[in-house]
Length: 153
Image (cartoon, rainbow, N blue to C red; front, side, top):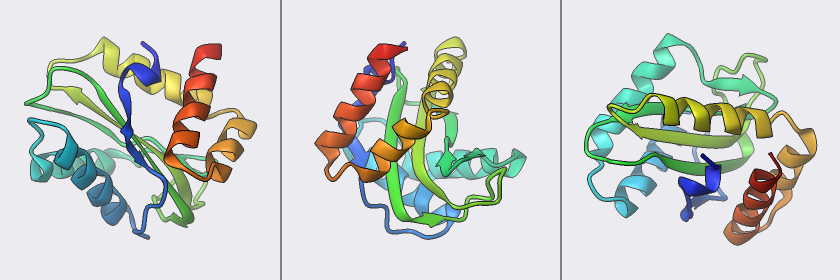
């Protein structure tokens, strides 16, 4: 499964305003819930916050990949957010996170959810890809960069 199979251009937030973990999650959840049918935003936020208590999804290098499963959807949804200022996400390297890929999967999903998570993790290992995402001026540019990189792997 490609990232672009689950990432809608409308789910890209190029300018996250929050500067803390909960705020960034809320911002992304509110955006998705306003655009996707069947998502209970309060429940989704609760699921993501609980997942973060198990261990931060901030993987380092300025990247976080929060993820969770929820009832009410029948396909995987990926959202992207970017914070120029950075968010303290308690990342593994203790540095702020700037790039966020939020993965929401149906409650009964297993393999698809893990495949998308692995694919995103693999793409984000490339420093030039991360740099392009940080420098892209507009939502359409960000989507194009993700789509081009997604085709390569």
